[in-house]
Amino acid sequence: MPVRGSGQATRRSVLDAAAALVATEGAAKLTLDAVAERVGLSKGGILHHFATKDSLIAAMIEDVVSQFEGDLARHMQGENGPGSFARAFLRACLDPDGALTRTLRVSAGILAAVAINSQLLAPLRRRYDDWRQRLEDDGIDPAIAELVRSAADGLWLGNVLELGVASMALRKRVFAKLIELTHLGAPSRPAGESQAL
Amino acid sequence: MPVRGSGQATRRSVLDAAAALVATEGAAKLTLDAVAERVGLSKGGILHHFATKDSLIAAMIEDVVSQFEGDLARHMQGENGPGSFARAFLRACLDPDGALTRTLRVSAGILAAVAINSQLLAPLRRRYDDWRQRLEDDGIDPAIAELVRSAADGLWLGNVLELGVASMALRKRVFAKLIELTHLGAPSRPAGESQAL
DNA sequence: ATGCCTATACCGTCCAGTCGGACGGTATTC
DNA sequence: GAATACCGTCCGACTGGACGGTATAGGCAT
Image 1: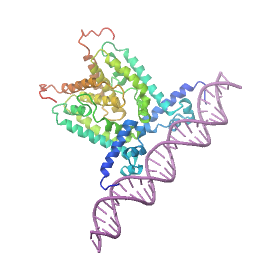
Image 2: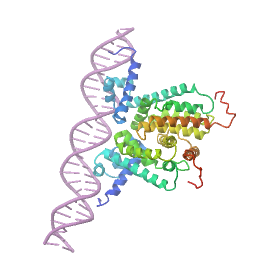
Image 3: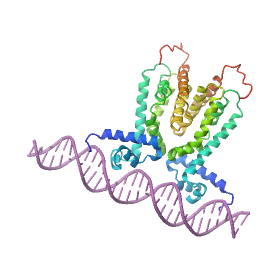
Image 4: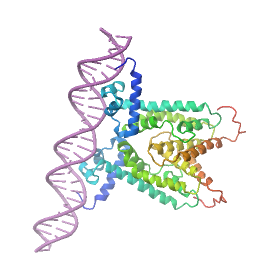
């Protein structure tokens, strides 16, 4: 059965299985045996791809980072002017319709790291510092940018922990308000908001 | 050493030790043995007060809830008019100077529950629903209320996970903006904020 | 002496990580 | 173009330790 060169695909499926496991059973149930069973491998097979459990979780975190980075880049293309990064950040977290995006992988990686070994968050922390810097230099009031960022994170947190989950309609309105804020915070220019998002 | 009637105090110290342990070592290191060592008891001693580890964490969560509830009530006294609850919520999370309040116990309880057994969050979830309801009925635009809540949560999250921790000065300004929002969102009445809610 | 509190010793389970090896492609050699 | 050596992939049994929980006995205050 082992096919040469199938390593990357298997590795990918292990990562997905681990994320799904965290999402359905909780971070405490993330054991190598459980992942192995879910992905249809033996524990030895898992450990061939990830030498240690920590390295598995580290890979999940890398997954989080790269995926979010991709989303950011994608959403940056439709934006320009002051507050463009803040809006991209917002859209990378929330649909215009209020749906959370990338919930599964992102939350799974972070939850697993928090539960098992929070030091594994280090790569994410580094990236986050970059993003925060870009938010500060986004051409709008840094306090607005930080407000928007924290609101996006707070909505995500509420969803992951199932705390205070608002209705889609309300979240949609919150999203709109936040987008609005990123425009209001712009330095007093002609306020030409001619083109759409 | 065992003193009659010292049960409550011991129980309290166990809870504190558990919280401190989570804060310093991470949720994964929250074991009965570790708590016992930290508090200067044996594991048997711990288990006398908390029959099971889950019940210990459940008590930590109750701690979170009751403490936050107390903070809310305290901060409600200085507020009135539309948005008063939103402001109280905000102040219960953040100092006017931008410092996070109640970080240790609250974060410890929640982190432990997430790591060990997320079902233990249930009591918190119930309370949180109440709070969200009160925010919706706070006399201001519900979207603003929800925005403020999520921003407060997001700031808390960033601090706990050490993600994107902003400077005190910036947080202070974010706090001010959020308070401002709770006033702006008031329905277009004579702006007579004379009487209470 | 009674009841609350704590210690010691112990058990069973779970789980990360190790180890030797199996199986099947792939490259090499002739 | 076979025979052979090699490597990537994966398996399965095992181990050592950590950890939650139990049972039991002892101590201090009233």
